[in-house]
Image 1 (cartoon, rainbow, N blue to C red):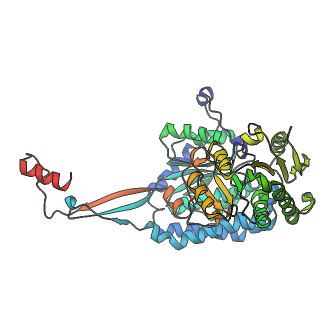
Image 2: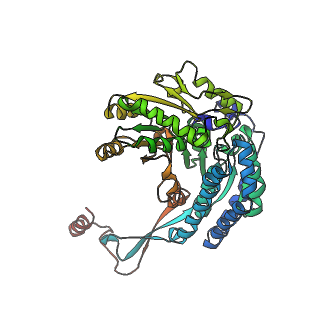
Length: 480
């Protein structure tokens, strides 16, 4: 996710001067209490983990209306979008985790080399300890609770820090989570810069941060003080490539769905389109038609179209349009935080619009002379969180998958890989590090401990001094 996705209040000043100041907030007692509880072993059992996950599911079911209301107040999310992208997504995540959790927890048997026989070898996953989970505002329920599901599955305790920009969603999480989860294992802390600074200064066993690249660097610097392992779910400018062999009508429908869901405030939304010059105008018309089909000719009146999280972000997005060729949309109402679905034609590649992750309802369209030119354009830029290709050309699909590096990739659709819990989700390079969802989330919050258990039978004397010629021969034969 972009820097724009993390709130002002969550941005931690990284200067040496501030790091020397006494922090106003001190959560060390809270962390120590959670660590003591973790050390008691209470979170290790399958039953405890199952109970917590089922409680989380119950919370989502019983308070769906309240969550919907909070999401509507924060982002103008309609009930359907809130259900699909937040509540149902999480319920599916929990269901998948519960189905496979016993298997994930089992030790993984490994072969043992002849020289170490008789012995057995295995890998046992163990919880890291107490994690700090910093959520994001664009999907404030999903992106806070999805990593929590993984942390619970792995047997961890956690402090949860929702984004204060989505203040209604943050408030309901702070209210409900303590009512449903083990209070000795979990705590919710609301707040902004000062609270986040205080938390990052503590010796957690894991940081999981969803947000922007600049704050991600600050989180990593804080983690280095205590050698805390970090997962960063960031973002980038996700490209969308349109080949002439594609079905333009279906392509346009799928891009509109992926781009303007949540008013474009999605870390994996198409950030810009590269289209072959010969079909550019036809594609643009298909795109306009799809926008009006899904959100009407006046999206401001559509119940399905969201709003920008804050006026500050509205102003940021409006500034991206300065000097650009807007060919569709461009209507802005700062008071109501509304920006219409907007198409920009042929922006300069050095413009702010093409340098910063947009994270809003603006879609730049650039025409390209060839397929190779499109791939080269993408590869000159930092690795994105997602990359999309629409084509019926299997050779081009294979080349695209082989040559383009991205956290995730989807051919002939947008964002659908998120629905497959067996696929890892995470960035590469500046779009993030680490991965989660399903078993990958369980692994992210676990340490894979190697164990070898040997017998006292058949003692091998070859490894002990003095080293005779025969012993050296045997050692070289079995080890060298």
